[in-house]
Length: 464
Image (cartoon, rainbow, N blue to C red; front, side):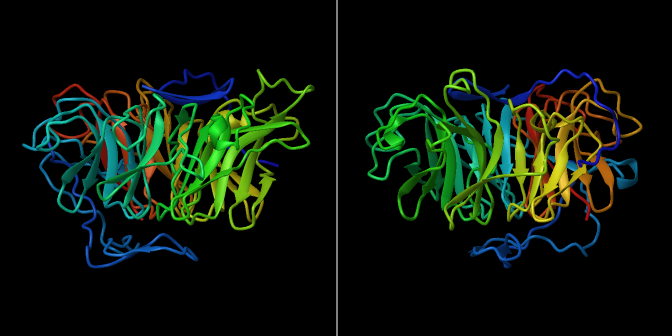
């Protein structure tokens, strides 16, 4: 049985970033540097994403240990207290002159140790290039590096690889399909991902990236497409899931046709250790309509073994097929945080796939993001989670499952809720080490001197 607690189901207006199957497509619809000084980063140490994880990024900072001093603060506009249930916050999208960014920013993602943040921005004053697009921020020196034209980015846990979608045809040679493709940027070099083993380009567009669609070391990238050129010439008009191995230059089709019917799938994610790929999928045939079908199962593929199984224990028997939703994986894929739209339950839940148990957060919420060890879950909601919540705007929260407490990230320096919507321009993202949370907000009261009236990207420190 699935344990439930907290609020009962309630009617809410759900908007912002949504993930929905529609026909053969997955639609993703999103529409002062003072403040808190977060953990100082140690450039001399190295980062390992978790137990039994087979990669270590050389020359990258390590996750901070949990016995450090409380988060230090900087600036005269910081008055937040953990006792108020709010977190210290700093704005990241600041102009190179220290002033406001002159364009909206969205879709942030964060490396496993919190050092690097990738985001898309229409601002042209983040660095000296005066270009808008995807940027990689190094928090050691607050420097922005231009990556590519605007799109939906995601970053590997080691901070080296940035995955993104682009319509541009001049990023790699031979891009002549006139369609959006998936790319990976690494140290200034760009390669196209949605190609066949022989390098043939896709004849139909690819969709992505979904958060955590790239392994921690950047080797594996998962994406969704219905291109026949990626399926050995078989065009079944179904959206399918693929894994690109950047080392071997191979593309694996994970949702093939079987005796059950035409396979389809979407919304793939990969565990940071690169062993497990999860996606929503199913099969359609004469009995199950291949045009108006929805995915019926949450599937897990083990890359080393080549096996695919249905994930059990996360919904009640007889529950309807999945129509949309977002999940988030821990480092090794053991813990899975699930959006209520996936489970049809009135709460975000966390599934322990080893123990086959579930835990309810007791909150409705949207777009969960879980830390590498499964302890912290961030989400977006316009609900009442703290005594001073007004339910006027969407806010960003993070729940500590170990302590059983919920903090609000989108709060002003005096602890008031954000005076604008937060978390609607890309889902909030928790670093794998559980130390940091990045999110978007149009609120002007989260830090001092925020006068641009635009959507900015912020980072919050999470107490340990």
